[in-house]
Length: 188
Image (cartoon, rainbow, N blue to C red; front, top):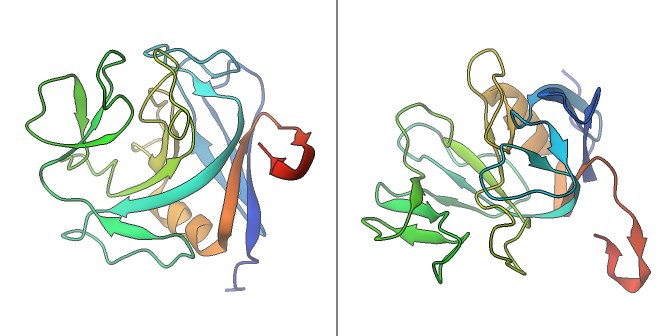
């Protein structure tokens, strides 16, 4: 098997804005992926089921240490703990942040029985500059069997996820539906 070419750009392609699946390409790695049940949208809203279009920094990763070894990647990875959650309550001060459970506001459990979050890649979608109701918990994560649509994330089969992670360079960005150059800041 050829080694993965390292990439600072990971592109997600879909047949149309309403498509619930697509392809992800990182360097010389290409794999099918699941997208949101509402397809890809530029005007993402909390709970709409859409994968946001844009260009997002890939911040860091999380993994279930009881199920997997730390993924081989240039990304920083930390283990998920049984009490980890992610706040999805737009009115809460920790909206779109990792929280410790039990947590009083609406949240997702990161320690899941179904394996979807055995590997989670946190994207800078509404994380660094949060805006209420713009969407939370938009991750790249492990897909359901048959690449069933997500609630807005990009999901891959675990072996494909591992191949993509090995292909990432530090500072990589995920591009969904294209992005533009903006001055000295580079891709956004």
